[in-house]
Image (cartoon, rainbow, N blue to C red):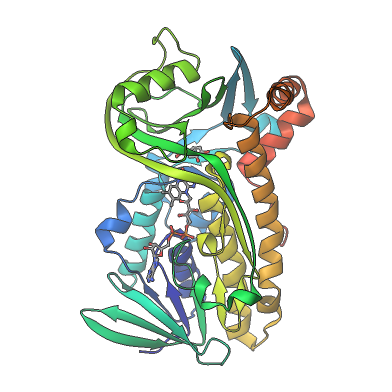
Length: 392
Ligand code: FAD
Ligand code: DHB
């Protein structure tokens, strides 16, 4: 098999890239290790920045999003019995965020790719990349029980944190920045009415978050020790902690319901640079992870592929590699700003087990400052809705 751009991974990064390249008339093949059903039911993020929604509109894949999404104009932070309410449009010149599950985005992108006849192979596991510094890099993969190869002009590594593309770059050429936080997030989906605003909480017992997927489905998270597993968290304990940490000790505000999905995810910041090796370009989680407190992972993956698709359009259009050569630096400028913001929100809202009384007082003073400062409120709001794209 042969194509112009071989895309490894059908997560948000790989799928958005495929649609962008397809629109630019560039041939590409997407190879995804898992089944379609698996990829479409993987529950992850839910907050879409305006730039991500605009891109879906631009690609003509926003019809279901418009019908089913929830628009968020506010963000609440609860702490010490107090409330910070951030009015997003008021603080950002009219911007807001859309709540729409990542797996719904993935479903819409897959449907669009398949409807247009574009190549997208499921259960096609990439095992090895070859000849990355030559001009015909090759992808080796297993599909239908057979070993196959895909020869490309360029390979896009969109295969997430545990994929094969980043490890294909010689380790001595990469600088790795890694910070694991001493806590995880237990996340649930529940058949119950969520709070009406996106609500983050910093409580003495730890962080909690109430988001939503619909008026009848709540997406809730609590900070837990990093080595906990789901067996440590029976339903009653989850609800007890949510009520207390979200400031509802009388259990009258937050409705309870059947929990139908649960997972525990680590909280970490990770950046691997540069994002390019020869003809291989990394995007999204293959190259960086941000702590979920900023709600940025999916949006950052989308920002990378916007930059890459433009660079590839120039490369295949007039042969110029100028934008491709700048790809890594262009992306990293945004990535580090998002890592900074996500780390800031993580430090602001969690209770690390080793937090000193001094650190706790600084944290409470910071929250008190934000509660009373327009500048402090704007600094959170403008990052939450998404920083502008510098190249726009
Ligand atoms: P991915 O979505 O990981 O997609 C990579 C794809 O590559 C996958 O489909 C994978 O199966 C495929 N693949 C891997 N290896 C191979 C191979 N060898 N061959 C072929 N295909 C391969 N962000 C938030 O903002 N809020 C959240 O609540 C949140 N929760 C998360 C929970 C979990 C458990 C995880 C892992 C991430 C979460 N994130 C969250 C982050 C966000 O979901 C990611 O940033 C986003 O999925 C990145 O998209 P991606 O396309 O780069 O990678
Ligand atoms: C959601 C996830 C996040 O990581 C976050 O910060 C806010 C909301 C969500 O899943 O809705």
